[in-house]
Length: 110
Ligand SMILES: [Zn+2]
Image 1: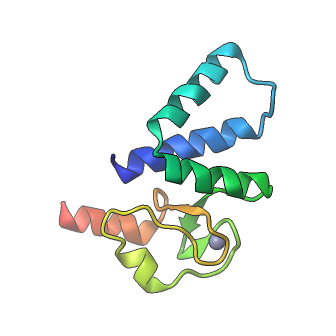
Image 2: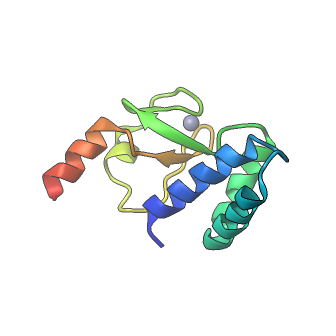
């Protein structure tokens, strides 16, 4: 399964988890579907972080994890070989969607 899809699923799940039980029936169906699509070990880690009231998916901006606001090692930012990456400090799954250096690299390799 594509890492980008997993991250996008987790981002949606995280958003909806913040609404607690105020989800509409449609949203509840979406949550059920997204959880089914997500690999079990990923979901377990995700739920574990959310249970501690922390960000389970953190955007990376300018090399900084938005979950713990600490700078990430360059090695982590530059190459994860398409694998799901977690922050070594806070454990959040890292989303590189808005990371400029990543975007530049993607354009360069395209
Ligand atoms: Zn972090």
